[in-house]
Length: 225
Image (cartoon, rainbow, N blue to C red; front, side, top):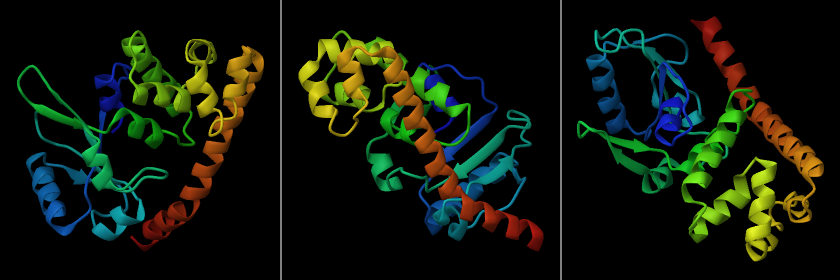
């Protein structure tokens, strides 16, 4: 669900980490711990790998020592702000096969974009690149869900204006949920840019408020340890 997923979706990003979303139940936790043993992975921070922390929304961090994955970091989460429950993420997943036959289950693109709406500076340019890559791959013959996704999430002013011009009826329907599309329909680039910045700022603030109590819990765990 992190940088590696972005690479698969065509928005290249160099990442030494592997970020995983998992189902937080007892049986699956046993599977995870077996995989971590195979990777010779050791925890590198609080919290420990327990269901209570995964279900609260904390990330659990590991560093691999296996010769084929030396120093690779693995971050595991189960609950994310603004993102649906794992059961729905799993149903909507994208599955791809690598040349050697290895299967990779990726968080769906809309879910990945939602998960990246954080307070971190690096996530917002990545959201833009993810959506642009999907747009340029499919803009000639988009289906309904792709068009709705672009109108709901696109962060590139020129492309939003292009969408509003080519699909005025769909844009008019979408403006109810995303008012800044009115600037796209008017072709107002500067106003659209300001509205996109305001939208991003609001999401960052929501993320800060979400993580504030979780950070306090982590600090308490550090002191306890």
